[in-house]
Amino acid sequence: MSRLALINEFFGIPPNASEHGYQIDHIIEFCHWFMGALFVGWFAFFIYVLFRYHRSRHPVADHEGVTSGISTHLEFAVVLIEAVLLIGFAVPLWAKRVNQFPETRDAILVHTVGQQFNWTHHLPGPDGTFGRRDLNLVSNSNPLGLDNNDPAAKDDIVVPGELHVPLNRSVIIELSSKDVIHNFCLPHMRIAQDAIPGSIIPMWFKPVKAGTYEVICGQLCGLGHYSMKGSVVVDTPEDYQAWLKERAEMAAQSQAAPPPMQRPPGEPPPGPSPGTVPPPGAPNPANQAAPPAGNQPAPSASASPG
Ligand SMILES: [Cu+2]
Image (cartoon, rainbow, N blue to C red; front, top):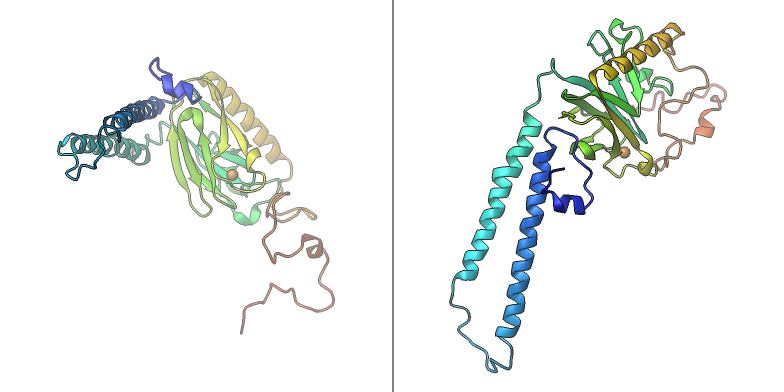
């Protein structure tokens, strides 16, 4: 944090660890100083008029009112400064973040999927190509539904919770969600983005300080929201390569074992995590386990009217 970021420090904003973060810190710091100046100025003016126009000095109301234009000019100046802040700084800064992405070949690309109540990261592995994912293959042991029959998936790395990224290299995270709206929030990197089911939304940052940084879910997403944490570890390039190698070996070992292509017998279908309140009218899982009696068709198999 810069030496001048007094208010940011006072409010407990964590130290910045990303390349662009200082710009956000500056604008937050400036806005607070500006609001502080306004507060002091208007409060002083308020005290002044309390004494200046006290009843003892003006027993009879003045029907003409204020004739000077100072307050109008002050108001106009405030509006102008706020417009410059918004149009001149905030909107271009935001547009730069969402429109100008780093070149994909220079950046680390990660797919991150939120679900109640954790984050899962998917990296393409040494071949640089993401393996196919299929919703029908999702199971507790295959949270992203990675298709192990796809050659591109052979070396893919799927990690829950903790993501490693290299120092001084841009990271593009393509975010999505399996259930409700989450928010991948990295306070130290000064970045947060909603994860919305059915959408893939990219976000990016460039870490400039090694260390372990907390990831929190920035949307109230259910009963276990408080526990939806993860971490991003910013490694030196050597440590990052070692982590990749270790993860790739673990992926290869799990590939050597018979892959759980279909859901093993007895494994519950993908659905809300334990602790989630089922929606009203949802079938009771205890009843679902029992086979349908006699020749009665399954209720949902041919439920279409007509
Ligand atoms: Cu969440």
